Length: 260
Image 1 (cartoon, rainbow, N blue to C red):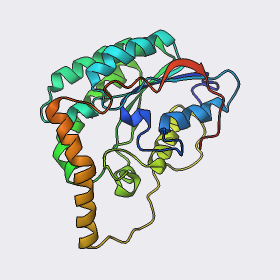
Image 2 (image 1 turned 180 degrees about the vertical axis):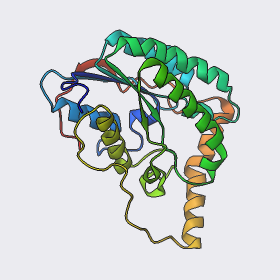
Image 3 (image 1 turned 120 degrees about the vertical axis):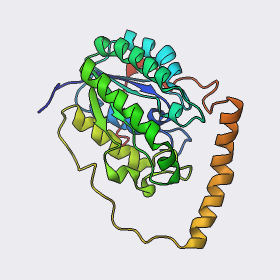
């Protein structure tokens, strides 16, 4: 059943997941699930507007303090808020503070828009996921509580086994591929009550497991190119998004460019 036949404005709030990494376009920019969703919403009728305030690397305190007030002032039909996962991946995290920032953001956004959407984020299967799983699940429990309290939709990406498949994750093991983002866009589309176009939870075809030498080579490449720089930023308090502006800072017309 459709909740709203004509969503005419959409604001996305969050970090690299919502910015669209690693769905890379030929011009070097990132697309991602939010752009894909905006594109599909824009095709439903004229006058659609879209803003994406997400910036890679942002913690939930920054999202709540910098992005949520701007998004609330836009009064959009749909607002998506995805944040807190970067906090759980830090060496130390105060989950009480994470909860407080999430409560602040949700309490501000929920009454300011037509429909607030929260998400249980996906995680790539592997040892890193297992290490941080308790923190992630604590974060998701907070989101479930807030969604129920404020009438927000909660899209359960974490509960879809296919989104843990390593084949849907980029070589950095932190961000989804184009196919992963496409499935997330479909999940949010369906959560908004719009007609399904595919089963976004459908598993990928069986894969032939790579041999031990191939896995070790891939692990070493990943550590050199992605893991060590990531650890360096954590130790020095830097972020990959330092100094970067929001992806689409204003709520402006978005004409349905058929990105998908």
